[in-house]
Amino acid sequence: MPVEKDTAFFSVSGLAKHFGGIHAVEGLSFALARGEIVGLIGPNGSGKTTTINMVTGALKPDGGAILVEGIDMARSPANLFARRGVARTFQVPRLFRRMTVLENLIVPALSDPAERRAGAEERARGVLAFLRLDHLADSYARALSGGQQKLLELGRALMLKPRLLLLDEPFAGVHPRLLEEIIEHIRSLNRDGHTIVVVDHNLEAIQSVVTRVMVMARGRKIADGAVAEVLRNPEVVHAYTGSRATHREAR
Image (cartoon, rainbow, N blue to C red; front, top):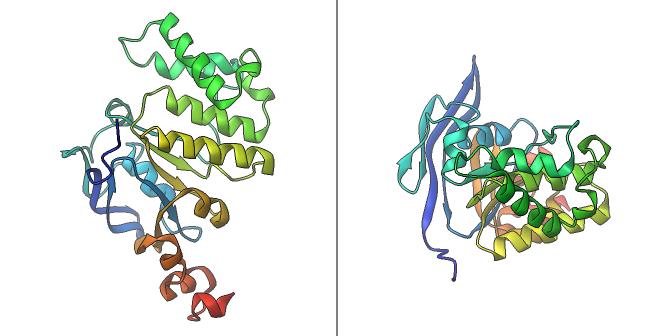
């Protein structure tokens, strides 16, 4: 079935989060169309991870709305976001290091009361085959390389049957060979209809998978649009370099 890319099923309006006197996120608004793949970039401290934490229920916003198919979930816990099809990965994979790779995938599936162990294991083996980790099913998570742990973290998110995936720094610290593999998995998931937001500092990798990019700086969105256009935006160049030069001059 073709993806309805013109349907905005996830949107954020006026989102805000303060930590004491620090405005980590202020007045953030955006919408995601079904089946879209979007990059979220910005300098360190710009509010990207705080945003991901809020739109997945890990942090409660101080203001604003988070709409999933028209339902405001701004005060909902993370498990309700997961039930609505919103899943995320973390900068540092949060794996059960003393459990096997297969067991790591089964655990999130069993958070659904309707899921049975046999069905969860069957789905987990399918996810491992997709990620090309099936040969490591019985290995302990602590024995995996950094890139393999990133893949397993992605697999754990997929076990929640998400429609929206938010990937927090999936390319960081990954060997170039596995980096290409992760990029191809992201493309494949998007072709299958998943809406995806990729947060990362690797601009080259970001540009290879997204068609639209949002830029944050000092807790606010400063640009949103086609990749080439956004990266030429003087305000974006200034946020990254401190210079008011144009993108062409900065290079």
